[in-house]
Image (cartoon, rainbow, N blue to C red; front, side, top):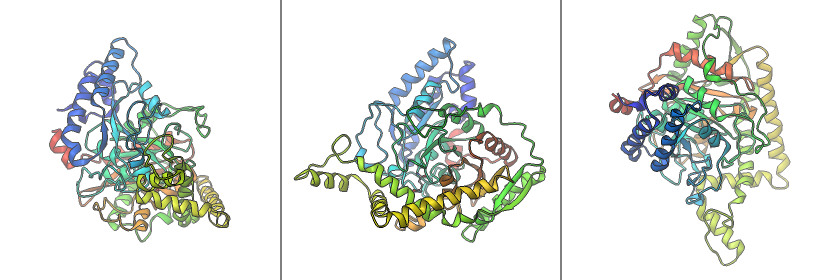
Length: 489
Ligand code: GLN
């Protein structure tokens, strides 16, 4: 059997025990990418030579007994993390040829732990989108059915993991961009508590919401990868100075008897597909069969989460993206004078969805509207966070569907921004509250995967992962995409 089907932790162990080498594993993944990337479009840049060189160095460290916790494991990196000397595009024309002179903290942490960079994965432009269709570099196909979307914005990472093109991948989640694609591709995607992973060197979208996290084929793998990515960083003033537990070593043994699970009524709504609901109900039942206690809860301000997010995120995006002026780096389209150069550069460099966000953001921040929109949204955000704080007095975790539906056809929603934004209906509230959330595969509807979202308390990823792990064991989800099955046998 090919090495590419190994789990991330399993692979790290085999490399450490010298049963396989990082070079063998890396070669396998590069071959897989070679075979599959044309159809799936998961990678924007593949770094074959660099990957083999890093793998060689990993193997040398193994020989000298200096293994990191993910030593030798090949990873996909969302093309939003700056990688020194390797193109980092944010899937935008404006950064099409940008080669960062520095490395993000999250990727630095991964390389220090022994990770190998296979390449940079596709995404929605500047992580704005839910289908990966706003990418300047083309669509990504869902490995379960390539005519459907893998979700977004971390669509390339999700597809690469689901299709066995890497052992794990990084994603970023501002309003759902790790969890929603994880749900639609049948993998595990974890958005940590805001501040758990450093934002330094990650191309900014909405700074008060952006958070990096792992995407992998099992809960254990996601736990290990999070451990490698996370940590306090003085280069990011919002990075939290909290200890990083060995998440992957402490997954078993949580007593399910007496575990208090909250089911918020606002998440079991009309728009939720009946078959998806059935799958979530089955997941809940697995826990009650083991003695968990279900509490019907209410998060009354949830209904304002979408409009709140779509004021705050564009406002922050408009500010963050003002740096792309064609002067210091990225695309420059010369105009007749400075203002004309700015205008031409930005008009050509940004895609339509990014422009829409910049316009909405600048509007809500403009004088006269600032109080009515931005300040009000900040107040509602506080109420949304308070809802969660209240509920967590009586529950340990919250269960919701991650998405209302399974993957939709490519082209299906791209012309209707509101429909596209509604993809985040179950994920944005958690982001606004800064809480951790994980999507774990829960089952198939008409052959397509769908995820259960488990929301945890601030900096309690450990418990959230233990619950997710218990779910994975009880669910027995066969996560392999059909395409991967044929090739992996
Ligand atoms: N789909 C949401 C948006 O377009 C979330 C994106 C994200 O989390 N990066 O804003």
